[in-house]
Length: 421
Image (cartoon, rainbow, N blue to C red; front, top):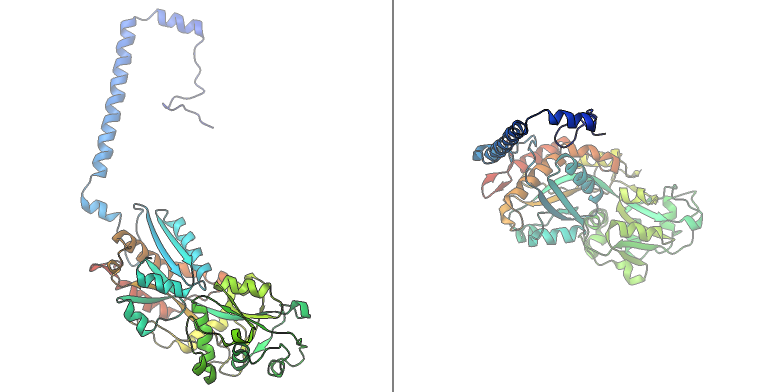
């Protein structure tokens, strides 16, 4: 409830009765009243003009004061500035986490808006190479050829996750809470199109006591360029020489299962998950969060130690700890599939932000955008990691955070360092 009007006068101030007011006015000299009113008006006008000049003077202060509002340090401190909108695109694998970051970061710094379009790793690589976005994202570490095609591009791991093998056998009496065991060779057989029934002896041998149906397997896979596909085919290539020679590892491959009519393509992790949900007898591969959110069955995959492991925060972290080694800040392309260790989940992967070391190389990236993006990425590998576990991503290990810090400190705009200590 307002207690004063726009001039600061109390709304509940008692006013004299009309008759009293008229008597009071009649006892004053009109000229004297007019003089008092004139003085008050002049004082008010002078105050307003003085205030306006003071405000203008403050806004036109020295360049050093203005630059302070744009300052940035390695701790990520920067005051509010003019609105900046940064555009990114790429992998669907980390999209739930990146999109959560964009919301939380905007809540902290309302002048900065980070827009992220999950179009797949292939699309992210293509757009950052064409310099139509400020940053890209990919689950696949770029090849030497891809790096050469985008001179000055660097990769920064921003999170860690696992690719889950999912399935839908509900109509055959096997609920999604039932864990089915898979080996690399069985998964190769399914996606090669040589294992086409759920009760195939190779699958049944891994699941004694489970009554698998004589149902056709629908092998769902990504139809777009995908880092999730890269991680999945990287694993299959690592454990099976036939797959490595016939299909290989890539963000996009020719699926042999399509030739047997058992393959089904779908776009994005969400598309694969949705297709598995709607297809009885289907199998697919998606980031763990998509399997959990769609209440799909999640399989246990045989690891290098011979154990069947389901993807959890801890088993993915085991894989990273046992396979990462000492990262090189100048080349953070990492492979951690089929990692050693009794409890390592075998289809684990880092996922990457793609940026130009000298951000001025990208015509779409202004200095303001470069500063905002560098600050956002610094925040993401530090405070942003606390949002990982809730979305079933693994917070970055400290050795990766340290390597990322060194990379971020090397970012510049026409030689001007974007983050300083």
